[in-house]
Image (cartoon, rainbow, N blue to C red; front, side, top):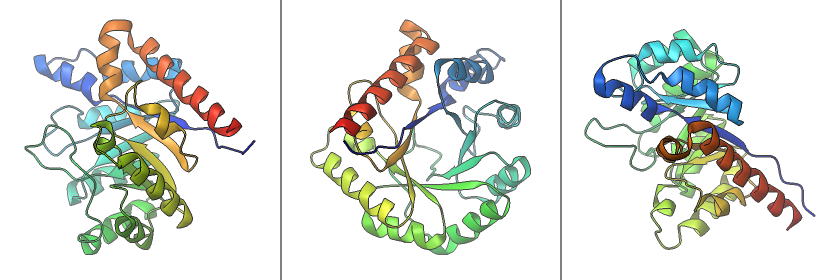
Length: 245
């Protein structure tokens, strides 16, 4: 039997806010959804404050700081977002690439190519006492660059794996090993569902998953608490199997 660290589940509630904003009203409330996520066993809440505020609003981030579990603020590496994050000081910030026209985040950061601009952002957030994560593809060069910037955490982009691209699980496994070998804490997320989360849960280096769109969609049919509890159960069971194996 090998020791496997328990896996945390971060629940992204951006698309509760998407539904709210469709009518321009205050319902459904993503913070109420966050409280239900806590009841269901979430270990953290993730909210992405985008430049265009298409879903999460500044007031949502402010209110989420009072939650009983850690807040992970996803953000682009811009001066505006650094100012907001350093003022609010969430538990963590995950730096992600952001393009106004995209429907959702497409791929990881180019840490190698953007090292000069990302370095001061990582430093400012760390100086504010915020745990910094970089959302990256499982590429050794990108992981090396992330470690070189002093970011303590990387979140591996699982989008290509979720779309069924050949070889992506092996690439994620190697990336997780490489990142852990650099001393980085490894997280993963994007496109994960009940049907594909198992192999990711089995990667012993991965400490946290961040899942949102699927859970909010599933909540339409079975309710948010039950949707998260089922994912929590799959994660815990998969982790136990990995330990036995």
